[in-house]
Length: 64
View 1 (tube, rainbow, N blue to C red):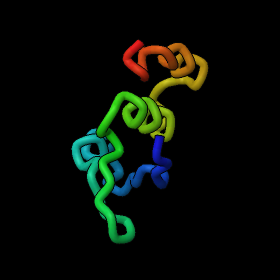
View 2 (cartoon, rainbow, N blue to C red; view 1 turned 180 degrees about the vertical axis):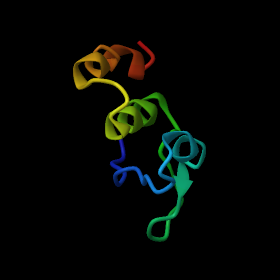
View 3 (cartoon, rainbow, N blue to C red; view 1 turned 120 degrees about the vertical axis):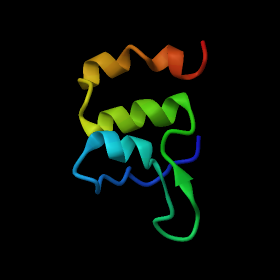
View 4 (spheres, helix red, strand yellow; view 1 turned 30 degrees about the vertical axis):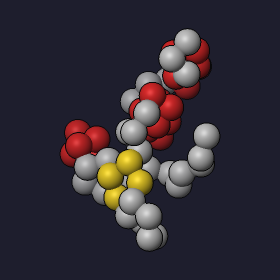
């Protein structure tokens, strides 16, 4: 899996940050919600779900 930079939270509203999950921080567009892994990582960075709860999604991330 390609490592991406940390998600950008600039809207002062997690709902708006969720809707605006695509950005170009350097020269390549990044969509932080482009996969199950990306979604779980975004949830962790937004601190919306406890880390131990996210660990339970490990198998689901890969579709298995």
